[in-house]
Length: 381
Ligand SMILES: *Cc1c(COP(=O)(O)O)cnc(C)c1O
Image (tube, rainbow, N blue to C red; front, side, top):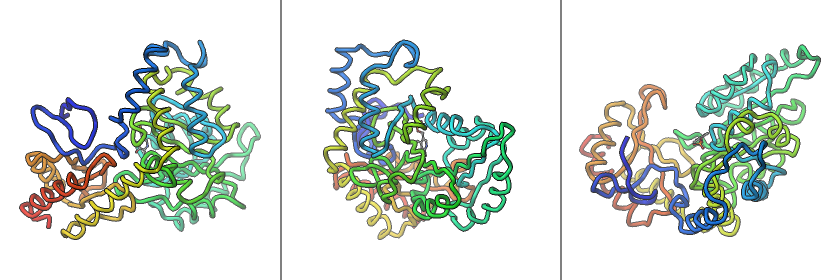
């Protein structure tokens, strides 16, 4: 691991050198935003730093309640529960909503935390459909319904939960949520869960995420998000109906048996949600930067894959070549991570660039110049 000794921003200090940072998930630049820092510092003055207990035991801090209320309003859902990571939010959502006799249906490229969540929930009936392939999903409906029609040992009806990432983190493509809702709701009455980790702060008006982007409010039962990417701090959350959130508060082990978000984290996050609620300036700047980067790389001859979001892969193929590309860029002062097996399939190695609203045009132009230089010398283009 490289040792970073500066705040997250367009440039990072590693050792004695400054590097252009083209790979953090700090989409909106909020990780180093003065308003978030001020909110954290002033909350520490009033409340200290730690919460010193799980919320359900001693009591919940009013900052947690405020953050949840503001997040629910921002996402236009009934209620919200905040946890200490997006990873835990996925575990909590799946494990609490389903028991082992229920049915889960998952996109083959879903995030590792969803895969772990399904394992933890010990769901016996698992269906995996081809990536973003609604036709393949529909082909499984007969088998799903065959199982569903048999009641559980308790006599209850089996639930069916269809789970997908909103934005797929390695390719930057977006789940076909409108089609998914169309085939899974209505007669089928399946429940839908979307993990919007790379959609929050990116898609939809003011960065409200994928549900807002497709105007599907009220159609997706469980929205999981992270507070560790565009929101710039740390944590995860689950948005949904009052019933779903109350059930989580009563039963989710990831809520009941582990501590709450710290005071500075929570206060900074309230500031982040306020900033997004008030203005879409940062989201617009992110997209302007992403468009500039993608257009520049494409025109230089790189294969930038199928992304329709700021996630910008440079497809390389060969594992060693991708690593070499990343290492030579580092020598040139550019930080870009190489992504290889097992994060993506063998032979699909790539660089993955993520621009931020904190970059200026000159930063991106300098970065692209170096990427083209190294890309040519390694014959990627
Ligand atoms: C990053 C990510 C997570 C995990 O979020 P953390 O807050 O870092 O735990 C979950 N799901 C997806 C799709 C992610 O990209």
